[in-house]
Length: 383
Image (cartoon, rainbow, N blue to C red; front, side, top):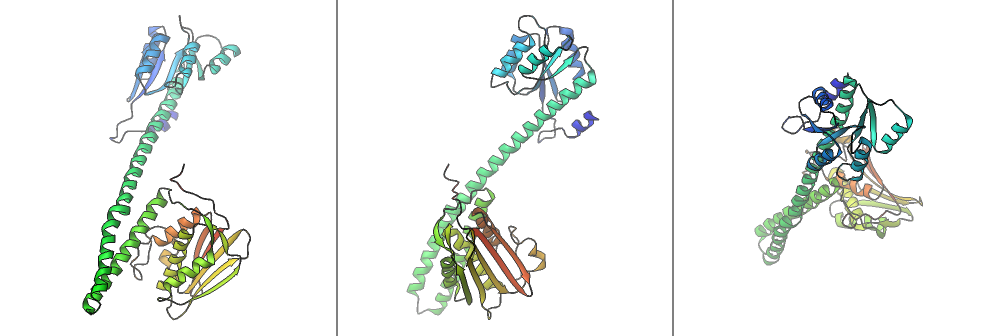
C-alpha cells in the first residue's frame, strides 16, 4: 500500500521522466552492497556503493542528488557513527537523512549514540526487504518533491523578474511617448482655438491620452499588488479633506452630498487613499443616476478607525456582485474600464490594514471603507 501511494505521487521532470535520485550505501562487505543494490533496484534510482568511510566521503563530494544514506555501523577504520558525524559537520551533506544498518542487538547506549550522530532510523540485520524499500522510498520521494519545489520556486522567480521588466516598460517606455502626445495636444489646443474641427480632434486626443495614462497607472498598481509590492507611505492627513479634493475633481460630472462627523484625521498614505476615494466616487458617478446626488459620509466617531461610505442609486449586476474585487471583472455594458479599479481599491485598503465592502439594497449601492486610524508604513523598496 505504501509503495502504491508513493509511486502515485512521484515527482517528475517537465519532460515526464522520473527525477533521478541516488542512495548512498556504505558497507565493508561487498555481498551486502550487492544485496542492497538488488533490493532497491527501480527506474530513476541509483545506488552509490562505498566500502568504507573515506570512499563514502569522496562520493558525497561528487554527487548532490543523494536522498538518503544507508550506513553500516561496524566497519574497520571509520565506523558508521564516525562517518555520520563527519557528514553532519559538512554543509554539503548535513541534511542527508541517515539510516544505520547493524547486526548487533539493540542497545540503548548504541541507539542513543546513533541518534546523537544524526540517524533518523536503525534497521537490524537480517534486513526486512519490504521495510528497507518502504523507508528508502519515503526519503527518495521527499527528495524528489524538494527538487520539484526548488524548480518551481526558480520558475516563479524568473516570472517575477519578467513581470518586473514588463512593468518597467509600462512605467517608462510607454509613459515617455505618451507624455509627448499629451504635451503636443496641449500646444495644438492653444494654437488652434479658432478652428472648432481641430479643437474637437485635440479634445479626442486628450481624452484618449488621459484614459491611457489611467490604464498604465492601473496596470502598474495591479502588477505591484500581485507581486506584493504595493507600497504605502503614511503621514498625517484628513480623510474628509481627501474626499473634498476628489469631489472637486468630479463636480462637473455629478453632484455629491458630503457628511462628516467626529475626528476624520489619521495617519495614512494620502495619495493612495485619494486614489481609493476617486475610484469609488467615479464609479458612483458612472453607474448612478446623474439627477440624484451621490451620498458621501465620513465618520471619525470611533477612536480606532475612520469609516467612509459612498452610496448612489443603482444596483450591482448579479453576475459580478460576488466578484467585485476580483481583477478584470467589469460590467461591459456600462463601462469600458479594465475591471482593475475595485481590485486596486481593495489592495490599497488592505495595505493600510483596513477593509472595503460593497452591496446593493433597495435599489441603492453602497461601498464602505474602514481604515485603522494609524496605518503601518510599508515600502518594499526599503529593507
